[in-house]
Every structure is written in C-alpha cells, then in structure tokens.
Length: 119
Image (tube, rainbow, N blue to C red; front, side):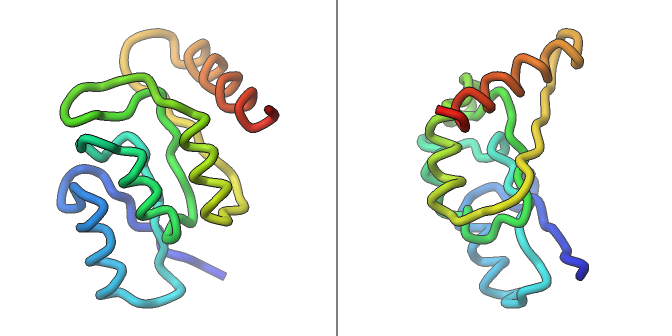
C-alpha cells in the first residue's frame, strides 16, 4: 500500500483550519498528513496539532513549537497525549534544527521523548 503524506509547513498550509479545508477537498483514504508540530504559529499550537491529529499518517516531533511567532520548548507530555488520543500507531520521527551538533541534539531529543512515552 502506498500513501501520500501532505505536510503542514507554514507555507500554503499555515493554520489547522487550512489543513482541515484541504482534507475536506481531498476526501480519500490514500492521502494523510505528515503532522509537523513546529509549523503552526498560533496562540496554542497544541490545540492546532490536536485538531489535525486525526489525519496524521506520520509526525515530525521537534524541539521547539511556535507560540504566535516565538519559539518555545516543546511540551512532549502534551504532544504524546495528543498522539495517544488520536489513535496513531506508528513511528514518531524526530527532527532537530538550529545550531549545535545534530548527533548530540537528536540524542537529547530522543531521551526526552522516550522518557515521556515510558512514563
């Protein structure tokens, strides 16, 4: 089976409502969302992620989310709770951006996410 993943990437899909409109137009089981948690710039990015989680066929967990236009550390407890409530059963890809050694940063990110999942 092959699925096409559409990613919300703060370009033509800037809001969770934009994502919902696209999925109403597409209306097929063959297209899903690669849910990028760091691409919503809104007062509550977690609410946006939760709104779109039902479409997720893959995720991009990042170190930071945007509250409006300010980057803040991701609350992984909130994200993992959303993932669990959505019924998603699959891999949770991690992405690290910005300065620093990517190998070191991804290890730190992995341990943070793993500790929340295992708690």
